[in-house]
Length: 571
Image (tube, rainbow, N blue to C red; front, top):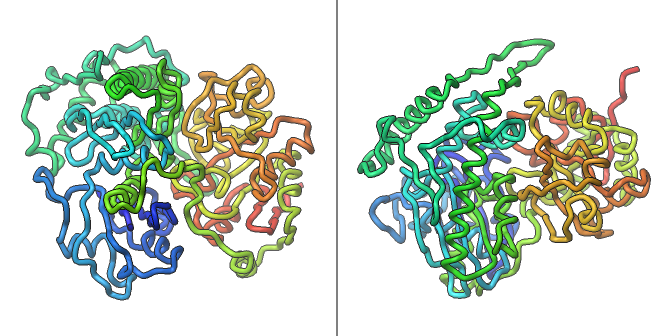
């Protein structure tokens, strides 16, 4: 089964499922080098990669599933639009093979399947929240061995994702792709300062009423969805609402200095307070949705997906809810992850997947590169390097122990927007100045954005107060006093951190690196981990991407495959 995600001209992706197992998944942006692969539906390069991983051709795929309904609002089970199919899968990359039809998996069902099917749970409540897809912005569902049953849905005119996005845009943080910045800024604000009374959390969910800004909740707006008229009206209404609070739209200046563009990364107290108010309100609404889903299903397990599922702070709130004993958040919770859900749901319908399926314990589903291919690129760049073989992790840990910041490129690329030790930038976590250096000099981004810790599972009880695995860096946890003292660079101003826990494994270079750092320093087996990229580029995919990014910035060393590349520090 080949699933295709990102139907709405962003976050295109592909996933291949064979005999109920995810064999490969990748986002198109990693190949196009265009962040979010904006303004395109093409999944072709990601799909070609997935097929190559299995050694098959497109013609040999049993079924192709897309994660949206092109005929919305009319129901549809298949799509035979040859032009659309060619837009998704450029025939030139597949021996000019042109599939005659694709299976339609409704957008929120694909999201829900991406969360429940790989959770390993026999039964769970499922919560999907995003901007919108196929006219829906939130879905409550029940996952069982028989599949997914939708319990309740909220229309696009009640979108929590769009609410959150418009706050970020109003504060000048960027378009919808920058909503995650708001989560970081919220930690610096006072959530009691602003009352956003147009959105109310209440038993069973929430209610949005923008009547005084020209949009009634009972207004029929379905005809304004596909041409984006409603979306434009909504943005104007929200802009008026935030301006009424005394916060005019903020446009951040950009200047050019010392060879690079310097964005304005400052903020005013009212900006942080609005961010905090929006974050808390979002969490309250999500908590009510989760309570409703748990009550309706009678289960203690919760699965989460949809773009809002990338909000680590909100996921931390859900994890702490009374009645939630186990939580699974799809690491590729945004639209890219719909490829996983579409492929798995198609496999389930064909009886190629029996639920509960295998639990997703790794996001390392993308391309890997041989030492020979890496060496060839290093030679092309003319960089000096050493082949350290099995000693690489020890040497890299030594550099980190000396206060250096390194690029880390190992094994198969991870899925989702969070680097998980395959395409990472790593540093020691004991000095907040290291975090500031990475934000400013390495990533060229706002100083108030937090960095996350990666830690061996054995260090987790002391640092996050639990032995529950957190493999995907997508659920915030309160930092323990030990964490505040020993890894303060990874603790956000609100007292939380978003951990990635790693099982001790002598065959895993990442686990070996963490263990070696602890052995060499006597500190916890924990490091700062952020994605290997600059602010305006996707996470690196290939050795060429990694070496080019390393060469262009102030990273001290690069551990790529078995090779270590160092930069000479100026005197």
